[in-house]
Length: 415
Image (cartoon, rainbow, N blue to C red; front, side, top):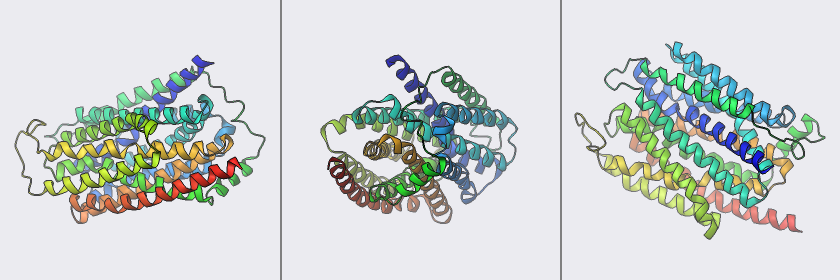
């Protein structure tokens, strides 16, 4: 059984890794469609919506249905869809191809993320193990984001903005998706017990709707929404920020996205160590305060930067190295609050809660990207990122209230 659980865990990590690359390629793609097809920043920002809204809608509609379909089958369907979509991207010569790609990626990720989050409960035996594996999983997600940005940057020709050579990256992404499909296909997953319930779909869906009105869930949903709004504002628009504000080549902008993702991964891997010594609220509060400080210190340094010929990382402005540090302190927040709320609920509600996590994560990501894109287009990058201080403040206040609800929920359960 132990070997079987490790096989499932490896498959979940690989699935998450593949979708990390696909989902977070949106920043690189937004930059490239501006160069290839002369799309405006506001116009390109809709790609985030084509990715995130299908995630939200599909997660909300399918969360209660997926246990009936089966977690393994759901993940296999998602991997098959993105494999086919990536194979067709060689023919992408218009903007609408990318809208369809991210729509498919969004629906597929809804199938993957809800089932992955629910499956964690089947392969872990305690809240501590649940939290540990959640952080590990989210850490590998960020490793996927890092390597994905590096991968895209290798296929971009800086001096040829209209070149379609970069689309060859989708051959590699199709191959990775197929490998993930085969690994899962040959992995045994025991879905009996907690997964299969003697309840109707209508009853399961009703349970999910009822959860939304719980104070614990309300504050959690608000927290997830504002966190993802902040994270996606930075992650999606970092390549554009580096090219337009820091005057660096497109390939370096995408590599900066990789550095940011590396910092995010490091933050998530190290979160487990901090949680062993400190309460989770102290950890996330410290992280938010450091993020706000970095914004206030770094953005004034971006004023008055001039274009440098033959620039490289050895000749880049000092601020280019400081900006990604934010990822190290921003990243631990998401897996921590996810694990807190899932551990506070009984296992039979964790699939429904996973659906709500995905829904409001997607809505927050879309909102953050579109707001940042429009501010970028109408004002400047500095203003766009200064505005993230508002949701950071709101998130801190929300998580303080969320912590109070967690304590109340635990005391109620104990009685």
